[in-house]
Image (cartoon, rainbow over the protein chains, first blue to last red):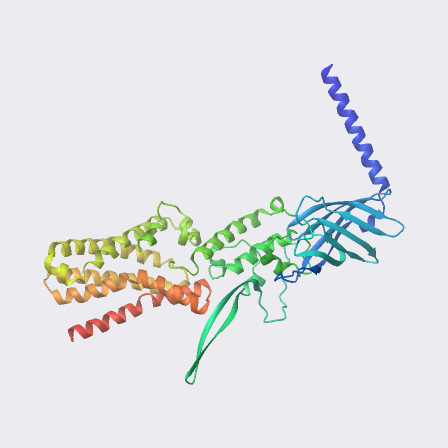
Amino acid sequence: MKQLTIVALVLVLFGCKSKNNENDIANQIHKEWYGNWVGDFDAEEYKQESDYVSRTKVNIRIISINKNGTVIGQSIVAGNKRALKGSFDEGSDKFILKEPGNNKYDGVFEFVIIGDSLVGSWVANNKNLDVVKRSFRLVQKQFVYNKMLMLPTNLDEGGSYVDYTKGVDTTFTENEDDSTYTYTERMYRVATDAVKTINASTKELKEADLKNLKKLDLEIIRNTIYARHGFTFGKKSVRQFFDFVEWYVPISDNVESQLTPLEVKNIALLKRFEKYAEDNYDTFGR
Amino acid sequence: MIRLTLQYVPFSSEVAFLRIKQTEVLMVRWYLPIFYVHVYSSIFVLLAGFTQFSTAILKTYKSLHRNAGKLYAIVVLLFAAPSGIFMGCYANGAWHSKVSFVGLGIIWWLFTGKAMLAIWRRQFIVHEKMMVRSFTLALSAITLRAWKVIIVYSFDTAPMDTYQIIAWLGWVPNLLIAEYYLHRKFK
């Protein structure tokens, strides 16, 4: 009898669920808008004193729009994946989507879709943040994992990737005729061209491939694997390289299960070398 | 100095320098044991060696000089130099560094061996000359690492480019200074 009750209960639950799903699917509208909308997330209102007003990349993912006006989605920004819930008003074509509100950086998105762009703004719940309002104009992008993708090789200035987030003030002394003068310059880490040629998603890396690379090279090569999988980076020092890459679509804050066995292997090797570089590069020792 | 050795205590196959030597650790059967012979024996070489150039010790504690000298010679000839030559064959930085380290190991062994032969034959001056050269090369353990810090801070070079430079800079200038010193002393 007990078993029978459970079976009946399961059947009822199952029945409800599938019926709900059918209803949901039947009531979905504007399916052409579902998916990832990606682009720059520009700071519009911010505290003047904060030293670094960042532009970053945002992905507003529309999961479903119901006939009754309820919308479900996700926002993916700078290492943060947040659920979105809100409304779509058929008359004004306006979306208002809210992040859950339990994270310091949560806020409210308002936007419209015009032609092939999604245009709007985001306002932070917390008015004490460095950036309280951002604007965006996004285009729809499909995420497809492609192991061949590489960082762009055509860079304008100097042609190298530079870590502008970690500068070290260095004092130089120069002698000219009989006067000596000193000046201070901010020095940045510069990556070598290896970051444009070594693909850690397609090639099994050997120690010999990595020995002459600097820590920044190793970091970029490793993070390019994650970028291919659409991982959203939290650190500014990583975002600076990937946010402006055309093919990069942040879709997830955890891609560990998506990594191929080759990538897992290469990541372990790269990390070992990063650790070595950190401990040993400029210290007394080998 | 002792810290150079202590970073490899307790035994682990992937700390510090070994982090980038896993190919050798896994593929070359004797690499890891010989690496440890080198790391642990070198500390005795440096400690024993530092006592040997004091005339005061030599005159008042003759037996200390003899015993420390024997320890130095045995450790260098049987352990530190042969293990160094072996590891030199697998050195980072391709043939530039390999030639340097293997060469360093061979002449270190030869100077030390000649110094021992000389003292058995009571040739004190030859003994002293050879020992100055031998210990100068032993000190490359320290000068090589010091050069590395200087090079990296001055030129921000890539790791293996640095390594190829310090492979030579670690001991060749030492030897030149030693030769100059000996030339002045025994001219």
